[in-house]
Image (tube, rainbow, N blue to C red; front, top):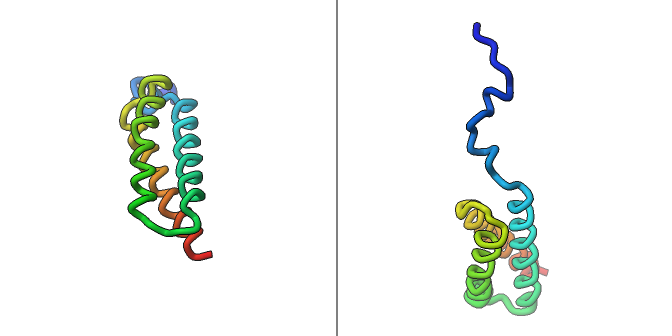
Length: 97
């Protein structure tokens, strides 16, 4: 049986190329924006307005993530959609209180 070190197994793995600091900042940025938008519309539940406000936030998220943080576009889009999921759950939480 051929013994290889763990470092040799990880060489060339694309997951090692992910900038985790940028990814963490994008996730925090998306979560904070989604929470603020849900809080803004907490007294009236109009899903179209909530999603429209989050759609206006998309270019800012793209510019910050892709241009300033140099994150992969897939990670930027994924963190944006994660924020959308947070937004939908937070706004639903305010609606039922």
